[in-house]
Image (cartoon, rainbow, N blue to C red; front, side, top):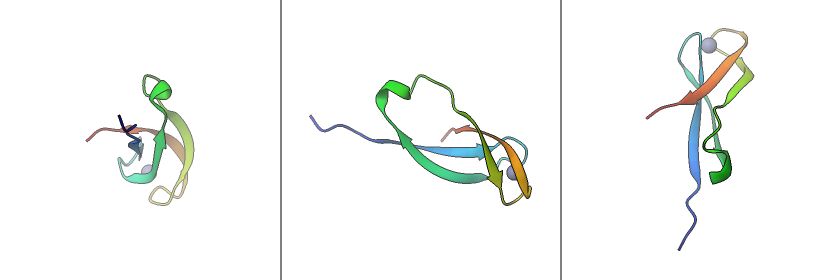
Length: 53
Ligand SMILES: [Zn+2]
């Protein structure tokens, strides 16, 4: 069985723009991502969450 890599989107909570793509291991899928990253749209560091499809 091939292991699927799950790609997720990191979405800015403030403007809801997708800023980053990443993947995470299956073990981490359960955890919610909540990351501070720079949003080029907001031009500042904002909280990013895992985006849904
Ligand atoms: Zn933003």
